[in-house]
Image 1 (cartoon, rainbow, N blue to C red):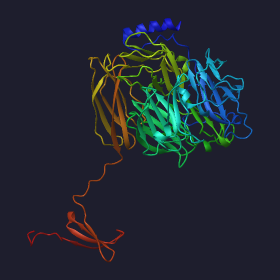
Image 2 (image 1 turned 180 degrees about the vertical axis):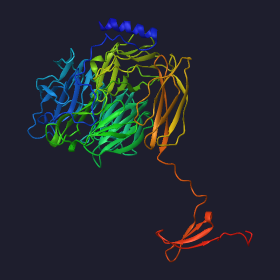
Image 3 (image 1 turned 90 degrees about the horizontal axis):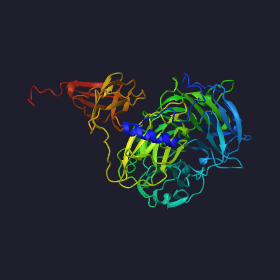
Image 4 (image 1 turned 120 degrees about the horizontal axis):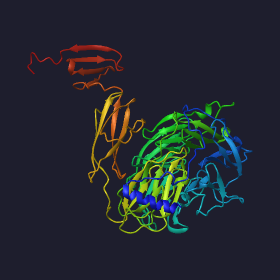
Length: 625
């Protein structure tokens, strides 16, 4: 059935030039939680199942929530049972089943989904840990389908695999290997070549290694030829590293986020957009619970007790779990282990004295915003793309993976040709990997269509449509993306509250009409897509803000530009007409010349008193000089 519907969809897209979707094509999404107005920061539920242990994984699949404890660091007597939950009433989550004790998946802190399957581990003690979505709210336990592996972080990019995850908990010799479907393609000593001890990320034809808490840096590789990875850059400046690094994409930029809990508490940020020029952005302290892991929704990161706007790198919500009174009695909820956004709710997992699970509100309004692609490789217009590299999209939302259907909601095809069959993996940290079943064709232009409304998040919101093109040859034979000629900001620097007028000038090489979308970069909502080219905006606080304009043509191709504006509480006072020379005298006082006042003063060394002053010392009347 999907095949015939997909063929019809592809034909429609070819005629209309933009991704479109029949709402009946994909499985229905029925949210398993209340998506209603809330008060941000409210702890809605009691501490749930503290007896299960250190709650290191939370996964949502087809309306059902799963909590997975980790044995190390769980309190003595914890039962370590994996549980399933109903969130119909977020103030009182209902345990629906105890599912047994699992082998820890993805280094005990992650999982992945493949279409309708949630993989929480491989077979362990006779139990399978794969759950297949059926009707909304019904998941069936299935035999592990043999998706290569489920235990290491490098498993998240199936059928590609990087092993081992270098982590400083144990001894290591630094040797890593790049594999595909169990076949080793390359093996080398990462530690001796780069000095980096860290976690792997395969993003298209790029491979990044991001340091753990050793702060040994970031290394980037080109794996266009997977049998001969090419080292592109190593960054150690700023000491990049953290407990469990994550990757994040927003507005055509790609970042590594490093939560850390040693020598302080907070997160570090590295820009890896250009793999040949890695750049340390900053270190941002956070009070409260240990900053160990990060989850994302749209432009926000959830780390420890905080919701952070990654556009401004500022916390916009502080939970203060350690001191929070709990509904039903008691004080304290640990939020350090996992923070899963579900619509305007946040499900947290904790460790230690206040281990277990809890439900919070993180946003006032119901979640009606659809997901969007934050970054992708290949990039739009990229040429020379390797024939066997995956196509990677970063979608920062909790998705219903059953709606990620190749050839239906996600289409990869030769320009206006037939959709390619392939495999999709969506990792717990928002990396979607599509790998065609057969190698791409040389010297061919391909288009990727993220069909508007097709892929859906947990709240049932459909994704924003996107189209981009790339080529396996030297040239892209397709309509060109818009060109932004200028993006100006009249009135910057400005005072708080004063209007800055942003204007954009752009053109489409094919002469088509363009739409624009503006983001002020201060945490305020982005504008809708519109044809207007003037965007006045006043900033409510001082700082430096990265404003972004996007341009879109009718075919869905995008261009973006940014500029940094400065907002001040007050303009600095004007400098004096000339400097004031001074000299230290033997008695400890200071002589100061004030040319603007034609005087010399002798003042106390601490500046508290004027001891003497003489006027008209530079009077020119008699000497004529």
